[in-house]
Length: 305
View (cartoon, rainbow, N blue to C red):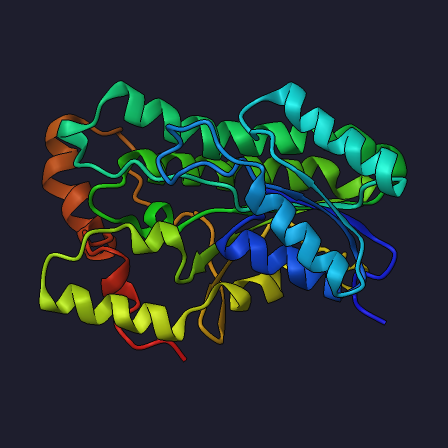
Protein backbone atom coordinates (compact mmCIF):
# COMPACT_ATOMS: atom_id res chain seq x y z
CA UNK A 1 0.00 0.00 0.00
CA UNK A 2 1.40 3.41 -0.98
CA UNK A 3 1.75 6.38 1.35
CA UNK A 4 -1.05 8.22 -0.50
CA UNK A 5 -3.51 5.35 -0.69
CA UNK A 6 -7.06 6.72 -0.84
CA UNK A 7 -5.94 10.34 -1.32
CA UNK A 8 -6.86 12.71 -4.12
CA UNK A 9 -4.08 15.03 -5.27
CA UNK A 10 -4.01 17.98 -7.67
CA UNK A 11 -0.63 18.52 -9.32
CA UNK A 12 -0.13 21.74 -11.27
CA UNK A 13 2.51 22.04 -13.94
CA UNK A 14 2.08 18.29 -14.22
CA UNK A 15 2.89 17.94 -17.90
CA UNK A 16 6.66 18.25 -17.61
CA UNK A 17 9.59 18.20 -15.22
CA UNK A 18 8.95 18.11 -11.49
CA UNK A 19 5.19 18.26 -11.94
CA UNK A 20 5.15 15.25 -14.24
CA UNK A 21 7.39 13.16 -12.00
CA UNK A 22 5.30 14.14 -8.97
CA UNK A 23 2.03 13.20 -10.65
CA UNK A 24 3.41 9.82 -11.72
CA UNK A 25 4.80 9.09 -8.25
CA UNK A 26 1.65 10.23 -6.45
CA UNK A 27 -0.36 7.77 -8.55
CA UNK A 28 2.18 5.02 -7.91
CA UNK A 29 1.80 5.71 -4.18
CA UNK A 30 -1.97 5.19 -4.40
CA UNK A 31 -3.39 8.65 -5.06
CA UNK A 32 -6.02 9.59 -7.60
CA UNK A 33 -4.53 12.48 -9.51
CA UNK A 34 -5.77 15.57 -11.29
CA UNK A 35 -2.93 16.48 -13.65
CA UNK A 36 -2.99 20.18 -14.50
CA UNK A 37 -0.77 21.80 -17.10
CA UNK A 38 -1.45 24.81 -19.28
CA UNK A 39 0.87 23.35 -21.88
CA UNK A 40 2.45 26.71 -22.61
CA UNK A 41 6.03 27.73 -23.16
CA UNK A 42 8.58 28.64 -20.53
CA UNK A 43 7.89 32.37 -20.75
CA UNK A 44 4.12 32.02 -20.49
CA UNK A 45 3.47 33.95 -23.65
CA UNK A 46 1.53 31.42 -25.71
CA UNK A 47 -1.93 29.88 -25.66
CA UNK A 48 -0.92 26.49 -24.31
CA UNK A 49 -1.81 22.95 -25.22
CA UNK A 50 -3.95 20.34 -23.45
CA UNK A 51 -1.66 17.56 -24.70
CA UNK A 52 1.02 17.41 -21.97
CA UNK A 53 -1.42 17.08 -19.07
CA UNK A 54 -3.48 14.44 -20.85
CA UNK A 55 -0.36 12.51 -21.85
CA UNK A 56 0.68 12.21 -18.20
CA UNK A 57 -2.86 11.31 -17.10
CA UNK A 58 -2.98 8.65 -19.81
CA UNK A 59 0.36 7.25 -18.65
CA UNK A 60 -1.03 6.94 -15.12
CA UNK A 61 -4.16 5.18 -16.34
CA UNK A 62 -2.12 2.84 -18.52
CA UNK A 63 -0.14 1.83 -15.43
CA UNK A 64 -3.38 1.00 -13.61
CA UNK A 65 -3.87 4.25 -11.73
CA UNK A 66 -6.65 6.82 -11.79
CA UNK A 67 -6.10 10.27 -13.28
CA UNK A 68 -7.79 13.04 -15.22
CA UNK A 69 -6.26 16.02 -16.97
CA UNK A 70 -6.86 19.75 -16.82
CA UNK A 71 -5.27 22.43 -19.00
CA UNK A 72 -6.41 25.63 -17.28
CA UNK A 73 -4.11 28.32 -15.88
CA UNK A 74 -3.24 28.68 -12.19
CA UNK A 75 -3.34 32.46 -12.72
CA UNK A 76 -7.16 32.32 -13.08
CA UNK A 77 -8.97 31.87 -9.76
CA UNK A 78 -12.16 30.62 -11.41
CA UNK A 79 -10.12 28.08 -13.34
CA UNK A 80 -8.41 26.87 -10.14
CA UNK A 81 -11.77 26.59 -8.43
CA UNK A 82 -12.79 24.48 -11.41
CA UNK A 83 -9.80 22.18 -10.86
CA UNK A 84 -10.95 21.57 -7.30
CA UNK A 85 -14.51 20.91 -8.42
CA UNK A 86 -13.16 18.53 -11.05
CA UNK A 87 -11.34 16.59 -8.33
CA UNK A 88 -14.47 16.43 -6.20
CA UNK A 89 -16.74 15.48 -9.11
CA UNK A 90 -14.38 12.86 -10.50
CA UNK A 91 -12.86 11.35 -7.38
CA UNK A 92 -15.10 12.50 -4.54
CA UNK A 93 -12.77 14.92 -2.81
CA UNK A 94 -9.36 16.54 -2.57
CA UNK A 95 -6.64 16.02 0.03
CA UNK A 96 -3.53 17.75 -1.30
CA UNK A 97 -2.24 20.23 -3.85
CA UNK A 98 1.31 20.16 -5.18
CA UNK A 99 2.07 23.35 -7.11
CA UNK A 100 5.32 23.45 -9.13
CA UNK A 101 3.75 25.30 -12.09
CA UNK A 102 6.00 28.14 -13.21
CA UNK A 103 7.65 30.21 -15.92
CA UNK A 104 10.89 32.19 -16.32
CA UNK A 105 11.50 35.68 -17.69
CA UNK A 106 15.17 36.16 -16.77
CA UNK A 107 16.89 39.49 -17.34
CA UNK A 108 19.04 41.93 -15.39
CA UNK A 109 16.87 44.10 -13.18
CA UNK A 110 17.91 47.38 -14.81
CA UNK A 111 16.64 45.95 -18.10
CA UNK A 112 13.50 44.25 -16.76
CA UNK A 113 10.18 45.30 -18.26
CA UNK A 114 6.94 45.56 -16.34
CA UNK A 115 5.60 42.66 -18.39
CA UNK A 116 8.56 40.47 -17.40
CA UNK A 117 7.85 41.32 -13.78
CA UNK A 118 4.08 40.91 -13.94
CA UNK A 119 4.09 37.60 -15.79
CA UNK A 120 6.42 35.88 -13.33
CA UNK A 121 4.66 37.28 -10.25
CA UNK A 122 1.30 36.28 -11.74
CA UNK A 123 2.19 32.64 -12.38
CA UNK A 124 4.28 31.97 -9.28
CA UNK A 125 2.90 34.16 -6.49
CA UNK A 126 -0.63 34.76 -7.70
CA UNK A 127 -0.83 31.13 -8.81
CA UNK A 128 0.22 29.96 -5.34
CA UNK A 129 -2.36 32.26 -3.76
CA UNK A 130 -5.04 30.90 -6.07
CA UNK A 131 -4.42 27.23 -5.36
CA UNK A 132 -4.20 27.73 -1.60
CA UNK A 133 -7.12 30.14 -1.30
CA UNK A 134 -9.39 28.06 -3.52
CA UNK A 135 -8.85 24.90 -1.43
CA UNK A 136 -8.20 26.15 2.10
CA UNK A 137 -11.85 26.31 3.19
CA UNK A 138 -12.45 22.76 1.99
CA UNK A 139 -9.34 21.57 3.82
CA UNK A 140 -10.39 23.37 7.02
CA UNK A 141 -13.90 21.91 6.87
CA UNK A 142 -12.64 18.35 6.47
CA UNK A 143 -9.74 19.02 8.90
CA UNK A 144 -7.30 17.49 6.49
CA UNK A 145 -5.25 18.99 3.71
CA UNK A 146 -1.70 19.51 2.53
CA UNK A 147 -0.17 22.18 0.32
CA UNK A 148 3.27 21.70 -1.19
CA UNK A 149 4.40 24.95 -2.78
CA UNK A 150 7.67 25.69 -4.54
CA UNK A 151 10.24 28.33 -3.68
CA UNK A 152 13.75 28.66 -5.07
CA UNK A 153 17.28 29.32 -3.92
CA UNK A 154 17.06 32.27 -6.31
CA UNK A 155 15.00 33.88 -3.58
CA UNK A 156 16.43 32.19 -0.50
CA UNK A 157 20.05 32.92 -1.52
CA UNK A 158 19.99 34.84 -4.79
CA UNK A 159 20.85 34.51 -8.47
CA UNK A 160 21.72 37.33 -10.85
CA UNK A 161 19.12 38.07 -13.51
CA UNK A 162 16.16 36.70 -11.56
CA UNK A 163 14.77 39.58 -9.49
CA UNK A 164 11.20 38.86 -10.59
CA UNK A 165 11.51 35.14 -9.95
CA UNK A 166 13.27 35.66 -6.60
CA UNK A 167 10.63 38.13 -5.39
CA UNK A 168 7.83 35.74 -6.30
CA UNK A 169 9.53 32.77 -4.70
CA UNK A 170 10.20 34.61 -1.43
CA UNK A 171 6.58 35.72 -1.41
CA UNK A 172 5.58 32.06 -1.61
CA UNK A 173 7.68 31.32 1.48
CA UNK A 174 5.76 33.94 3.45
CA UNK A 175 2.42 32.75 2.10
CA UNK A 176 3.14 29.15 3.03
CA UNK A 177 4.25 30.09 6.53
CA UNK A 178 1.01 31.95 7.29
CA UNK A 179 -1.18 29.25 5.74
CA UNK A 180 0.60 26.72 7.97
CA UNK A 181 0.24 28.86 11.11
CA UNK A 182 -3.43 29.60 10.53
CA UNK A 183 -4.20 26.02 9.52
CA UNK A 184 -2.49 24.25 12.41
CA UNK A 185 -5.62 23.76 14.53
CA UNK A 186 -7.53 22.40 11.54
CA UNK A 187 -4.81 19.98 10.38
CA UNK A 188 -4.14 22.08 7.29
CA UNK A 189 -0.43 22.08 6.57
CA UNK A 190 1.79 23.84 4.08
CA UNK A 191 5.46 23.43 3.22
CA UNK A 192 7.74 24.71 0.48
CA UNK A 193 10.47 23.02 -1.53
CA UNK A 194 13.38 24.70 -3.29
CA UNK A 195 14.24 22.21 -6.02
CA UNK A 196 17.57 21.57 -7.66
CA UNK A 197 16.61 19.62 -10.77
CA UNK A 198 17.23 19.44 -14.48
CA UNK A 199 14.02 20.64 -16.08
CA UNK A 200 13.21 22.58 -19.23
CA UNK A 201 13.24 25.76 -17.10
CA UNK A 202 16.83 25.11 -16.04
CA UNK A 203 17.76 24.03 -19.57
CA UNK A 204 16.65 27.45 -20.83
CA UNK A 205 19.28 29.34 -18.77
CA UNK A 206 22.07 30.50 -21.12
CA UNK A 207 25.50 28.94 -20.72
CA UNK A 208 28.14 31.67 -21.09
CA UNK A 209 31.41 29.95 -20.23
CA UNK A 210 33.10 26.62 -19.64
CA UNK A 211 32.45 26.74 -15.89
CA UNK A 212 28.76 27.27 -16.61
CA UNK A 213 28.73 24.36 -19.05
CA UNK A 214 30.30 22.07 -16.47
CA UNK A 215 27.82 23.20 -13.83
CA UNK A 216 24.91 22.50 -16.18
CA UNK A 217 26.24 19.05 -16.96
CA UNK A 218 26.47 18.23 -13.25
CA UNK A 219 22.90 19.41 -12.76
CA UNK A 220 21.64 17.40 -15.71
CA UNK A 221 23.21 14.17 -14.51
CA UNK A 222 23.04 14.56 -10.74
CA UNK A 223 19.87 16.48 -9.92
CA UNK A 224 16.71 14.98 -11.37
CA UNK A 225 13.06 15.93 -11.16
CA UNK A 226 12.08 12.50 -9.82
CA UNK A 227 14.27 13.09 -6.77
CA UNK A 228 12.31 16.25 -5.93
CA UNK A 229 9.05 14.35 -6.42
CA UNK A 230 9.89 11.97 -3.58
CA UNK A 231 9.73 14.74 -0.98
CA UNK A 232 6.72 16.46 -2.55
CA UNK A 233 4.73 13.24 -2.30
CA UNK A 234 5.99 12.41 1.19
CA UNK A 235 4.82 15.78 2.53
CA UNK A 236 1.25 14.93 1.47
CA UNK A 237 1.12 11.67 3.40
CA UNK A 238 -0.77 11.22 6.66
CA UNK A 239 2.44 10.04 8.28
CA UNK A 240 3.90 13.52 7.64
CA UNK A 241 1.06 15.41 9.31
CA UNK A 242 3.46 16.74 11.94
CA UNK A 243 5.46 18.58 9.26
CA UNK A 244 4.22 22.07 8.39
CA UNK A 245 5.58 25.58 7.89
CA UNK A 246 8.99 24.31 6.77
CA UNK A 247 11.38 25.21 3.95
CA UNK A 248 13.10 22.29 2.29
CA UNK A 249 15.47 21.88 -0.63
CA UNK A 250 16.23 18.78 -2.65
CA UNK A 251 19.60 18.53 -4.38
CA UNK A 252 20.20 15.15 -5.95
CA UNK A 253 19.91 12.60 -3.14
CA UNK A 254 20.33 15.31 -0.50
CA UNK A 255 17.33 16.67 1.40
CA UNK A 256 18.04 20.03 3.06
CA UNK A 257 16.09 21.84 5.77
CA UNK A 258 16.57 25.62 5.53
CA UNK A 259 16.55 27.98 8.46
CA UNK A 260 14.09 30.86 8.56
CA UNK A 261 14.78 34.54 9.31
CA UNK A 262 15.47 35.09 12.99
CA UNK A 263 17.57 37.79 14.74
CA UNK A 264 21.31 37.15 14.50
CA UNK A 265 22.67 40.16 16.39
CA UNK A 266 21.30 43.05 18.44
CA UNK A 267 22.86 46.27 19.74
CA UNK A 268 21.23 48.73 22.12
CA UNK A 269 22.24 52.29 23.00
CA UNK A 270 20.46 53.70 26.04
CA UNK A 271 20.51 57.28 24.78
CA UNK A 272 19.22 56.18 21.38
CA UNK A 273 20.88 56.07 17.96
CA UNK A 274 21.74 58.81 15.51
CA UNK A 275 22.78 58.30 11.90
CA UNK A 276 26.36 59.12 12.90
CA UNK A 277 26.50 56.68 15.83
CA UNK A 278 24.90 53.97 13.72
CA UNK A 279 27.59 54.42 11.06
CA UNK A 280 30.41 54.65 13.61
CA UNK A 281 29.33 51.96 16.06
CA UNK A 282 26.34 49.75 15.17
CA UNK A 283 27.09 48.91 11.55
CA UNK A 284 30.78 48.08 12.15
CA UNK A 285 29.83 45.91 15.13
CA UNK A 286 27.32 44.01 13.02
CA UNK A 287 29.42 43.74 9.89
CA UNK A 288 30.96 40.43 10.92
CA UNK A 289 27.48 38.92 10.79
CA UNK A 290 26.51 40.41 7.42
CA UNK A 291 25.65 37.99 4.63
CA UNK A 292 27.73 38.05 1.47
CA UNK A 293 26.58 38.63 -2.10
CA UNK A 294 27.40 35.12 -3.32
CA UNK A 295 24.81 33.41 -5.50
CA UNK A 296 23.43 29.90 -5.00
CA UNK A 297 26.49 28.25 -6.54
CA UNK A 298 28.71 29.82 -3.86
CA UNK A 299 26.63 28.23 -1.10
CA UNK A 300 26.44 24.85 -2.82
CA UNK A 301 29.85 24.60 -4.54
CA UNK A 302 30.06 20.81 -4.26
CA UNK A 303 28.73 18.26 -6.71
CA UNK A 304 25.31 16.75 -5.95
CA UNK A 305 25.27 13.57 -3.95
